Image 1 (tube, rainbow, N blue to C red):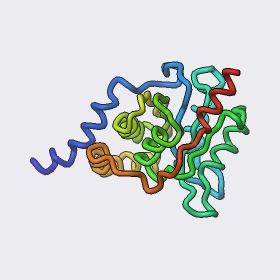
Image 2 (spheres, helix red, strand yellow):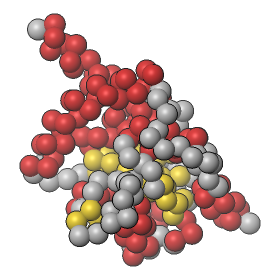
Image 3 (spheres, one colour):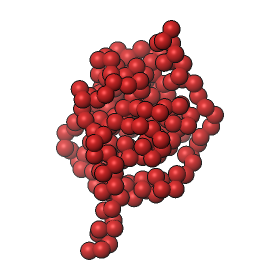
Length: 204
């Protein structure tokens, strides 16, 4: 029993950290930046799960809740490019290309959060993911220094959804270690001005 309690402590932490920082696109506070986490590609296009995240980001942009969208995902090999697929989807749904900034080294949630803060200079953001993942995303981005509000998009409770929920129990353990020890991302690199330039252009 003690082992079960210990195993569930990281999940309890993510729920507590995000408890008052979750809502819908309609409830999201107005801000400057939305962060969309990658969720896989099918034949070079966003999976249905990722498409729903991007739909939420497009809605936030159309309603004026955010002004810039940071898409963060995996581009570790030439034949797999989540950020550019996400960009193409968003531009096809009405978000101007100069309002989209790409992070090509968002290999996991912690890396995406740290890079949003350290590389792209994001201090406050609306995070978009599925409901089973958004609490961990908020908890990790808060630990990385990003004041965060999370939107967990609705999805059919299919096999993928149940797999994602089960996986979160184990992923929460890594998340707790990341938050405690704050490791450097797999790739950090130099600072990028994409977000600040996009926001400055809007102010001109």
